[in-house]
Length: 103
Image 1 (tube, rainbow, N blue to C red):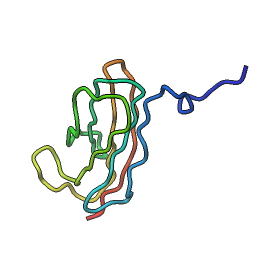
Image 2: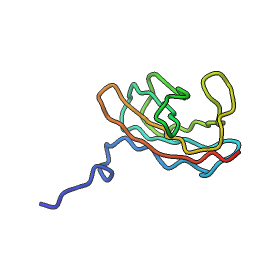
Image 3: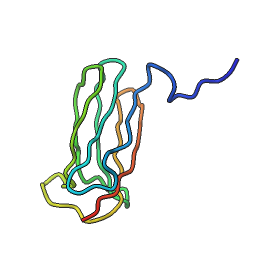
């Protein structure tokens, strides 16, 4: 039987590419959940340091859209560079996307 990649499964959690990318001043983070899920959306810099928790908690099934304005947890503007957004669930699923912030 042919194998099905995880991305093609209809019940897979999807983290879509950020748009626009590169961005300034904001980028759209969009993800899709096949069922209600408890998750965290965390932004890391190129060194792997956590700079912002964009969302944490219970989300209903469906499509969710959040904006990130290039600031850290304290509202400070972050410098130009590559950033990574990671969606992780309580069940251990992880999805990661990269985005370039241009100041």
